[in-house]
Each structure stands twice: as structure tokens, then as C-alpha cells.
Image (cartoon, rainbow, N blue to C red; front, top):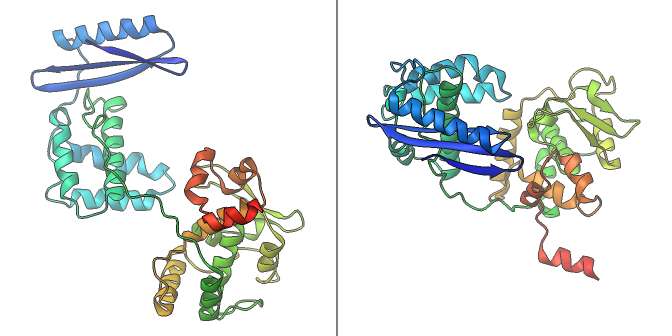
Length: 331
């Protein structure tokens, strides 16, 4: 028997039936409960009588992965990494790429997932990708009538990072980068400036390295990011220190700000932390430091807008003050 669950202003209808050893697990949302009930009745009758769509039951999971990589992946911001991930799946002997989609079972993907020698967070990201591929095959390509991965649980992930960057660590890093408040000429000096800019603005590493002077409005004290991680444009207010750092760059103020890739920044930063013996510090931790510092000056809505979080609750991931810092503000 199908079920109906109210979600906001809509009704989600679900049909879950096993017939001829194939599990049909489908759901659809409706604006009225009556429409949801009618859909359940119709779908259950179609499944039981065999009066269904003409599915291409010869298509395998591997076929779906390759088509997804060709048609869907290129439309995404992280297309390069996702295509690399799909190619890696296809080269794994234990990935069930040869299983027909109509016979795919959740346990097959779970067994593959459990063999992966990676962290649970990475396994969950991979699972999300495979789930999206099968869902595309079900909804738009007519290659299957069910997605057995819908109910496959996500693995427990470790707590979010709370690593901050101390003033002593910043000073040591700037000394290693040989960065002073002058125009940078060495690559390591550029990395130092980028790190300081990240702490001042909360911008991600890639957002900074891709900056062009057309995005910078120094007189109006802000810059604009285009096509961010959330696919939005975002205006980032600039502190007086951030403006000072930007003014250290090329005086021509045209074209790209930095002639360095995000990967090169990461490599140079890791080299610096290893040389200085600074443990468990990544460039992305600058975002934690920035959010925590900015929260002392901005209200929660202004901070969310500046950092680029649609859900203010996600700010708690990056807001990591110590108990002593909070106590000092109590007076």
C-alpha cells in the first residue's frame, strides 16, 4: 500500500512494491491529497498488471554513468572533478557497472561503498553522485522504473572542523612567505597575500585566485563574485585592511589579480605548514577564522550575506569562538 506524507504545502506520495524480484520504489509530489491518492492507485495497478512504460531494461549502471558524464556533468561548476570521479568508478573492478539498472539493488552499492578505503564523508559524496545518476536514468531517460539508492543510509561523518588560526601562526607564515606590506614579486609572497585576504573577507581560495580587476570596486569598498559555489553572484564588503592588501597588487588594475592557480596556492601553503611544524592547518581554515572574527562586527544576516550562506544555521560550522572569547565579551 502506498503512503502519503505532507511536506510543507505539498503531499509526497510513495509507492513501494516488489514484483518479479524487482523493487519499485517511486515517489512524486502533488498539490492536493486527492491527486496523491489517485497517483498511488494508478501506479500500483500499473505495476501489478505490468501495464507500465516501455523501459530500456538492457541499460547498465555503467551506461548511465557514462551518459551522465557526457550530458549532465559538463553543466556543473565542478565538472572537471566530477568527470574524474566517474572515470575512477568505471575503472574499479568491484564497482557494479555491468549490472542492469532494472536489477540494481541497494546492497550492491552498499557493498561497493564499504570496500572503498576512504573517509565516510568521501563515501557519502560518492554515494550522492551515484544516486543522482540513477535518479536521472529513472526520471528522464526511461532506463529504469526505480531508484534503490533512495533509502540507502548515509554514513556517520566526523564532527565539523573547528580549527582556528592564531596570530602567532599568521606571523610565522608571513615570515616564511617573506610577505611584507609591499607589492609581492615572489610566488610565496602572493600566497601570503591571498591567505591574509581570505582571513579578511571569508572568501574561498578559488574565489580569490580567479578574481579579475573588473570585479573590484575599491572606491565603493566591495567586490563581486560571479557564479559562486551556490551558483549565485555575491557582493563581498571590503574592510580597510582588505583594501590595503588589494592596493599592493599591480598598479595597472586590469586583468586577473593573481597569476597563480588554486592548486599552486594549496601546495605552497602545505609546504609552509610542514616547514614550520604547524599541525592540522589547511588553507580553508582561514574561512573559520574569518567568520569568527567577522561575527564580532556583523549581525547574523549581514554575515550570512557576506559569506554566501543561504541557511544561517550553516554559519555555525564556521563560527568557532573559544569560551574565553565569549566570556571576555560578557564583561
